[in-house]
Amino acid sequence: MKLSGHTIFITGGGSGIGRGLAEALHKRGNKVIIAGRRRSHLDAVIAANPGMEAIELDITDPASIERTAATLIAEHPELDVLINNAGIMQPDTVAGKIDDALLTATITTNLLGPIRMTSALIEHLKRKENAVVAYTSSVLAFVPMAVTGIYSSTKAALHSYVLSQRFMLRGTGVRVLEIAPPWVRTELMNSQEAEQAMPLDQFIAETITVLGTDADEILVDAAKLFRANVGPNEHDFVNNFNNQALALFAA
Image (cartoon, rainbow, N blue to C red; front, side, top):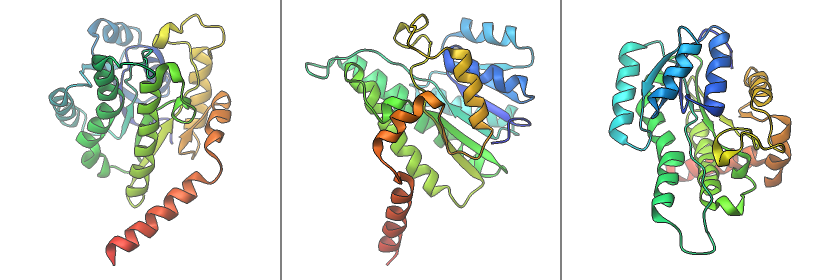
């Protein structure tokens, strides 16, 4: 991905990885618009980064997503990059009775939200050259953490969706990327002070470096061991399987 000259929309841009990506890409000469539910966080980010803009968005609300997409297309017709970053992570009890509110909120935020957001913008993005749709998943998509089983499952589902969407958009100008962070010092699970977690600034710096390559999966070194767990040749297998399925359905 070219690291400058884009107009970029980032969900969950008020803190953590979203803010880090927004600021790093803003410094490289991109027009960056961030979104989130907490207006105070958004205001703090744009105050610290003159020229950046913010939109309030409830990623769990389909109507809010549609309004945001319409606003973006109207006010920023040059928009060509979407980074689906918003997400929540809470401990759960997969060995017992699941709290339904936690279950619903996690799936709606982490899986339905990015799918809906991309759906609302994809036809616009198809009309752009060198457009990008990126999703922040997690290494837990490949190696689940049992104490956050629901979160891990949403990230695994998101990874699967990325593979399908990348295949189906292969003949367009839209690239589909997956950013799969390891444990990073963010607000998720109160990890800001966790010594074992990767410092946020280090993660952002390494991620931006990989983002500037032709890689479809944006992996820092600390994430690669987890990604390798699923075995070799996953992409070739997925692509071959889908090519055969398309041929079968077309017959």
